[in-house]
Length: 432
Image 1 (tube, rainbow, N blue to C red):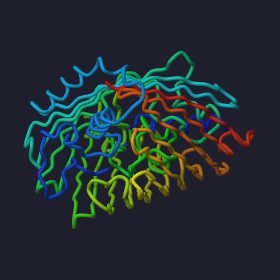
Image 2 (cartoon, helix red, strand yellow; image 1 turned 90 degrees about the vertical axis):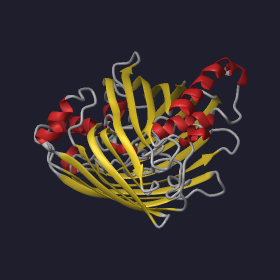
Image 3 (cartoon, helix red, strand yellow; image 1 turned 180 degrees about the vertical axis):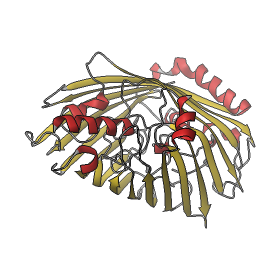
Image 4 (cartoon, rainbow, N blue to C red; image 1 turned 30 degrees about the horizontal axis):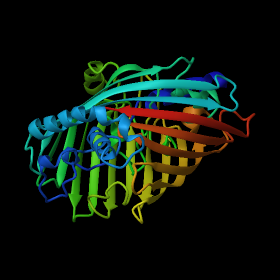
């Protein structure tokens, strides 16, 4: 039984192991015009808060807010000025960061602690229609993910503790990866947009305002969705249409066998194996500017059978509701259903709230989740499990955040000997 579970969880981790996180092209409302002279806030953006466009914009916005320890960052001002000149003069917006995470479990039949780091270089080069609402740009992101002195990476700690899920999504030891290399284009005054190339479906499928695993929740239950078997980064395409100012539809197709460690092989798997992850999403947002925080959407997906990986085909659906109020509170409710396809959960319901400081870039988040493990992926007879997570992201100075994080795993499905396990974590991110 344990051997079967280990084999199944290995397949599930390969599906969820390398994501990052739904639909917008840039900050220009459909039908309007953009102006690159406004700086990083006009960098074209197709995906949600974890996408390249959103990350370079949010990093730039964070350094413009009041922060702690101001003297530590003044020496970097010439570098920030250089980046701004490159963007405004040539449409090339870029960034880099290094994130590190340490987690320790209160009880575990296997390893009880893990540490990992990720170095990323990412950018967006607007090559067509710069300064208009119908811009086209090349997006890239290269990463190196590695362990930091422990036997396992944080991505594996949940399984080691007997938890049917990931207590840290992006902190693996996968090595050097090409996770983005695609063209994004908007047209018809930004009412329509598409991306095509090496994509990350979690950048734009079923996202909301706290979906970024680098800066917000760490657990898969609150970042992305454990009932959606989102593939690793690989060849794919997606198109988004906005209608009547407040409604959108997004659909796409991606390689179900994506492997960002070997992107050349993706040509063979995409055109040769022809095993795909397909999705379609329809939703409403209150305004273009608040499209990630004031959002209601329904997502449906289908995953083809993955013959070599031994994963059956499947389908599922997800629902998400979030609505920000008083410019600081963001409650959310999210649910998912799956029938096969390699998803970790066949039922999942999450609810929680985020609190955004009004002067600083600090964020507090709290979430609760109920999940029923997938019998097809992890085996029959597993108990329902419950998850809670609390984090506080401190913006110490413009280019550095520190995030203490506490998770409670109740009735971990793969460890019936334990009623509850605590996971304490500390994440730091340096952007430059």
